[in-house]
Length: 114
Image 1: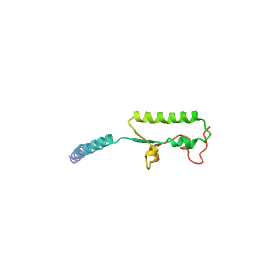
Image 2 (image 1 turned 45 degrees about the horizontal axis):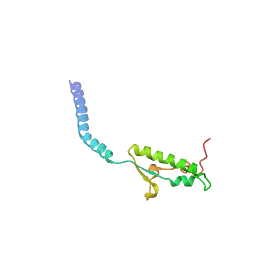
Image 3 (image 1 turned 45 degrees about the vertical axis):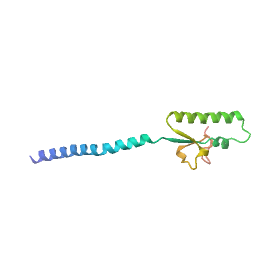
Image 4 (image 1 turned 90 degrees about the vertical axis):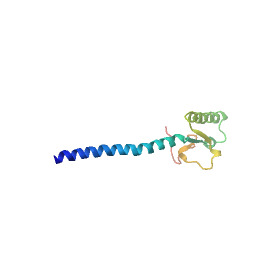
């Protein structure tokens, strides 16, 4: 009989613990999800990185094409709900949200892939 009571107490304790945890944490998780929904994701576009990537003798068509590609990336992100800011309007930008031209964002000493 002692074993039977112990098993029932353990099962009831586990069930009550799960229910209490759910009831206590459900409200907090709902509030956090709601707060995340209020935050607008931000991306910063660095058009100056195109000028850094090409020398002064680069054809205007090439630079225009790269500007168009970077603008399309910005439009795509804006369509996904991002707030897009030009880098010259920002004082300091974390690298995680900065969108640059691919050649300008290469690390020093990094070789070109074939």
